Image (cartoon, rainbow, N blue to C red; front, side):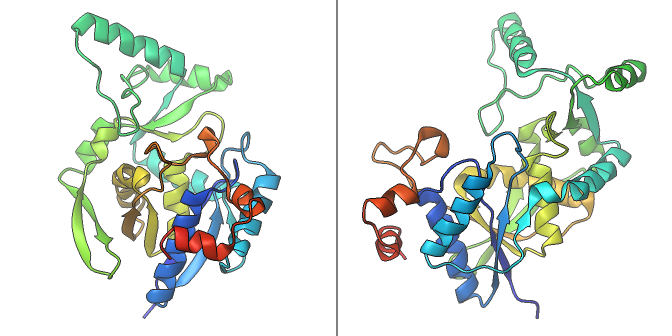
Length: 290
């Protein structure tokens, strides 16, 4: 039988912290216990924030922890053509449309509707307001003219078209620490008309991670609970693109003393800082329960 394939997939937009260490060590632990393979993938589609020095630091931090992974390492920015090919399939199925709205325009449209109805506008699992559909029914001529003029635009999934093409329920299987599986019902519609290709890059996190997992033969996805809701959308994309759906495990998050999850954006203490303060790889492993 084919060996299970796990992957750790950080973004090089800052230094790794204890939360990353936990996810990487857990992937490695699962791969060892299930006699599987461990891959490392660099998710660097955000070319404005991802930097070479952060990527080099990822390798340094993981090697310091004693982790090993297969070579070569897949860098997403080197494989945009794979995402373009997947997007063409979605476009061919008629389940995407271009969106020319800025974040400010979306916020203003939502605020207007909330004021008009006196009700809160629905939010997606990340807390962002669902797209109000401003560009969903633009005339074809207007779309072609705006695209031809070079106007920046993203591409969104068309929820209404998707429900017509893929009626019924969707789901995936998750596994626990002992390998036991259970079926989970997915709810991709709570994301609304999600962005599938961003304005500044020919893909999005959702599209690139689904494409890469399939191309790399990933069978077991181990990642944090903060990405559990995104799995609903990923399952939908896998169905649309005819890709296999891995098994999923969403682990608990490492939190600071105030109970907030660790994050690069919050300047959480990095592994490098812990190392400079005298922590050893053994200290980190014991602190995280390994």
